[in-house]
Every structure is written in C-alpha cells, then in structure tokens.
Image 1 (tube, rainbow, N blue to C red):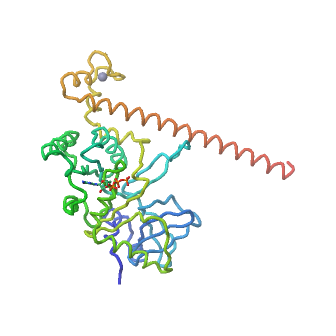
Image 2 (cartoon, protein in one colour):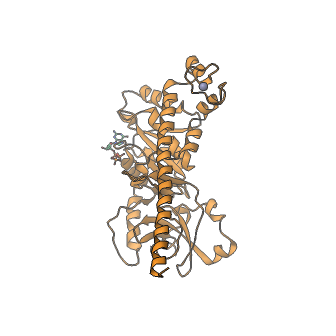
Image 3 (cartoon, rainbow, N blue to C red):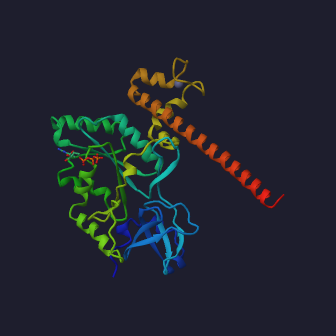
Length: 349
Ligand SMILES: Nc1nc2c(ncn2[C@@H]2O[C@H](COP(=O)(O)OP(=O)(O)OP(=O)(O)O)[C@@H](O)[C@H]2O)c(=O)[nH]1
Ligand SMILES: [Zn+2]
C-alpha cells in the first residue's frame, strides 16, 4: 500500500512524459525534500528515504524529481519545469539554486505598511524569470480602514497587469484557504515570497490546516526512526498540492533576470522599441516614445522609475557574477598550470 500518490507529491504530466516505457515499468520516481551536506532526503510513494550523495551526480536541488532503480540506485534527474536561483549571501557572488519545480508562487504583501507596487514588480520579475505562475496575495484585509480602501489597493495591483491573479484576504481566517484553493490543486507545487511579517507563516498554517499533523507524521515513516532538527521545507496540503517553504525563497534577490524584467515590464519595453533612436536614453531625445507616454499619462512615472531601478540592479549583479566567473576560470587555469609544473618536477622533467 502506498503512503502517498505521486500526484500528492507534485508529480504531473510534465514529468510523466519524460519517462520511457521501460523507465515507467522499472524505475521509481522520488522527490528531493531536504538537502544536507552529504545526503538528500527523498519522498516517494512509500514515504521518506535517505539518499547518500556519492559518485557522479548532476546538480540536484530541493524540488527535483529523481529516477531510481528498484535497488535504489540513481538513474537520472528529470528535466525541471522551473528554477529559482539566487545570489549567495555575503560578499561571495555565486549563483545558488533555491528551489526547482515550483509551479505557482504566492507573492505575499500586506494591505497596510508593507503595501508597495514596486515591491510586487520586483517579485514578479523573479517569478517570471523562473518561469512560474504568480498570485499576488494581499493579506490583512481585515486591518484596512474600509472595504473601499481594500478594493482601491487591489485595483492598483491589478492595474499592473490585467491578467495578474490578485487575491485580498485575512490570512488568519479559515476562508483564506478557500480563496487560494484554485491554485492548490493536486500535482501543483506552491511557494511563498514576501517581506517579514506580511503573514507567510500564517498563510502556510491556514492552507495546511489539519494536514499539518499529517506532514509531521512523514517523519515516523522514516524507516530508521530518525528525527532531524532541520525544518521541513515540503508540506502536503489537504487538497493535494505541495507547499515548498524554503527560507531561501523568502530572501530571493535579483540576478540575471533579463527575461523576467522583459516579461514583467513588457509594456515599457514595447514603448522603448518605438523610440526614434535605437539607443534612446529616454531623457530629452526627439521622438522618445517613453517621454511621450509619461507626458500623456499612459505610462506611470513610478512604474518607469522602478523598471530603471531593477534593470540597473540586475546589470550590476550580473556584471559582478560575470566577473566572478571570469576570475574562477583564470584561477582554475593557474591551478592546473601549477599542478602540471609540480608533476613535471616530481617526474624530474
Ligand atoms: N489581522 C491580521 N493579522 C495577520 C494577517 N496575516 C498575518 N497576520 C499577523 O501578522 C503577524 C506576522 O505574520 P507571520 O505569518 O508571522 O508573517 P511572516 O510573513 O511569516 O513573517 P516572517 O516569518 O518574518 O517572514 C502575526 O502576528 C500574524 O498573526 C491578516 O491577514 N490579518
Ligand atoms: Zn526613448
């Protein structure tokens, strides 16, 4: 008897269609739910299993699907639906995979102090870059002065993009789960982003509800009866979706988000293409479509300034990333040269 169905763990046709008929019969798929220095914790139909990180393996992250032989040997990692990367904290600039195969991100922002349209655009850029779907979840609706005020703020977010999913709710209310149900279907993997204090943990609890207990029980399925102190990053929701709540997702920054910026600010980039000069700086050049749109009110000055700000930030981060890569490459060359030199010396050559 299976403990879980694969769909409950986020398996969907995107992964299914990657399997050959032989693989379908002779392998089992397991999902990475924890990442440690020397091992992974995988979850599959029969529950949790430890997986030692030995031998030649591709890059693997939380959220990945692995194919294992019936003996538990690694066969291959399936292609990813989406990827979230980040610049590592601190001075060391490096890209790090945060989570993969997240389908939908709840961009959480409160309707009081934290409310800022530019913040939504920043998160949208990250989510669009990863290739995931966004839902803007505006919390603390109950703390708004009036329903009209809440509606007005929702309309401001909706104006960023008429097709954007926007939901306003009280994260403490059990009805919040119903409001988010359209995105919490079986086979879907969800994640949350947002500033501190906006209600992410509250939402997780509301969405998971009684299933919180069920998730805790996953530990007891561990054949070795081990209990680790690491916080779980994968929660199963009662309606069948998977919630990946990794701390890294909460602190994601902009790096290499060219694509994400273009998708998020398609309107601004379309205008810029209409400028008379290809290298228009959108200052005082004749025939500048951006300046014209700003003057007519078609383009919001706040939105345009935020676009410039994010583009500058991304250019800066990417430049330092490219520098870092170039340095690593040069350093590698030097090491190899030095090693070659010492080998020659040992050989007495
Ligand atoms: N009235 C009201 N309070 C809320 C709502 N959502 C969250 N809160 C409260 O806001 C506070 C912060 O909520 P958290 O869920 O801890 O916020 P968080 O985003 O997880 O914060 P970090 O853990 O710092 O990232 C808590 O006291 C919640 O009870 C809401 O919709 N309405
Ligand atoms: Zn211009």
